[in-house]
Length: 130
Image (cartoon, rainbow, N blue to C red; front, top):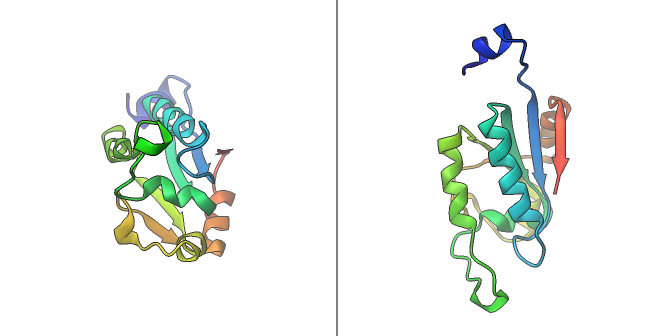
């Protein structure tokens, strides 16, 4: 169902921003966020993801999880495009503070300044923070 069909049927498309602030392992937040994003995308909502603070590590290439006894789910981010989740944003200050560059990430991202990220958030209808 496309956007026009949803509008005809009375459905509305909302802008959802999922803000990922935590490291990928050590808690369930990162994996839960990814699952919720996929659910939102399945319902054809306008889904964006922002990675700030230690959340930038969720996208880092070459994660080795054998010592934390958790499955490495970072390759799942590559599947987001199949669900039309293509708006991935990284906070420049968070990335810089952790010594990361765009080349360190498993998927293409748009790097935003703190001000740009605030503008993005203002433009959303629903913001969920993990």
